[in-house]
Length: 361
Picture (cartoon, rainbow, N blue to C red):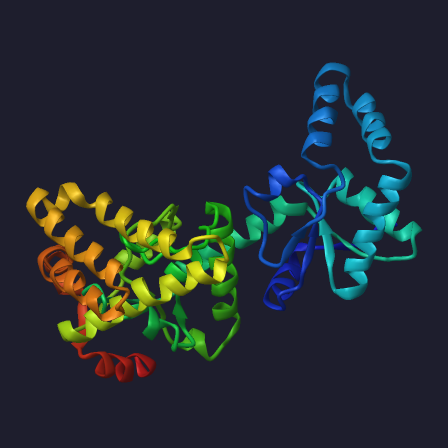
């Protein structure tokens, strides 16, 4: 009889960062899985399509026969061996498919026959996803603080020092503005939600931290390509606000470090033939995306300063476009939004003052 892992064990598995074997097809996996899962399909995308076609035209029994015909002999042995090798390297692993049905049960049956006993996630991916989304809903009922401040205040950096800080931008792999895109790929909506949920699960489990409030950045409903789950976002918007006041010169340095120097290193780390060119196009495209809002004359002036900095190769030359972009564009936008939420401010001060205030409130 196949061993199963029930829902009351999901929290422990996810907190322990247990690696899962996701036997769904690649096309399913790329839409989203769970943190720590590796994709080792029992039917790859093309095979799944063939079986699905037979299922629609000839019924379930014929589809099952087709599946066994497609994955048999050496191919079945290769896939079983790969699962078993992974399970031996990761003794706590579990297997799942879409609903914890035929595919995952067949995979662990073949593994069992090869001498490798591995349990199946009861309810499969759907059950794991339901649990993770319920975790976000539960966290939304907890007290929160929003951390605000003008662009370049390094709110994310401060959040990352807090045991009860939740880095939404980190989970989104995006810094939340036109210039916030990273060199690496953004997650799918599902992967963003699941990564966030596991982070919240750690917080909810820690009884010390649950005596304090979750601290999140004062974000928009969307961070790049992903959206903050509505219930969680609504809870954020109702929460008290803490505001960092940071001098312009320091904010320019923060922006240059994160959006210029670190971004260039991301492109270099990716390999590629022309990382400098990709980096330059990244910044130029970001400026282009806000050209209408900047207005023609201001866009031309800032683009000229940006291109001159890129041509010089001197990191500090980027201050020339960063500073006016902050003072003339981002700061007025933030100040306008802040006026709407000013009654929710419970503390406002310099970066270090806020850093000292947060852990005890």
